[in-house]
Image (tube, rainbow, N blue to C red; front, side, top):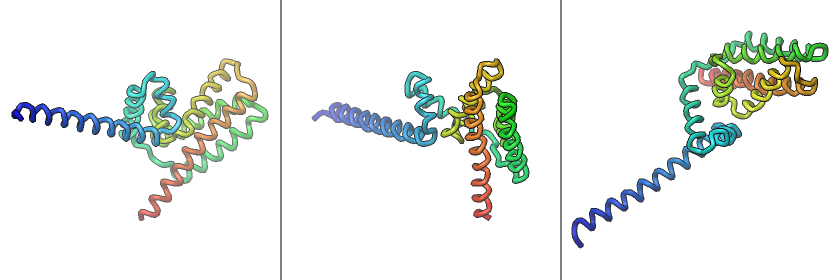
Length: 188
């Protein structure tokens, strides 16, 4: 066989190997993003309109998050926030609208103290989706109800649900700290 035939065969084989490697890399990347983001993966891919754009968005979130200095709360701050949450929850009986506003402010305060940027709601929810993918949808729902509440369009049941949604993120933000402290203690 002529040398040029062997060159074409080698180029074709290399192209096949590259294509297989590329497909395997994309499957691994998709699997890793799906595992990291959970239900947020499907929401973002659906919102983006295709998998590649959605995965690029999730990858950009992950890279942005890596640059942030997210830190645990001090035990005193965690206790103060827990006490404030109890106050907001107790307030719900007499003033549900005010309790929802207080819960929103409280969650934002915890995120700020932890080091999350407070640019705007969409960026906040994107940032927390990396660390808290299981509850970010609750945060979005709570925020939507809170906005409706501010315009007088939320029922008492809506406001109760918003408080439950805020609580899920609030608990996750605080419990992640305890896990980090335990890891730090074990490392010492």
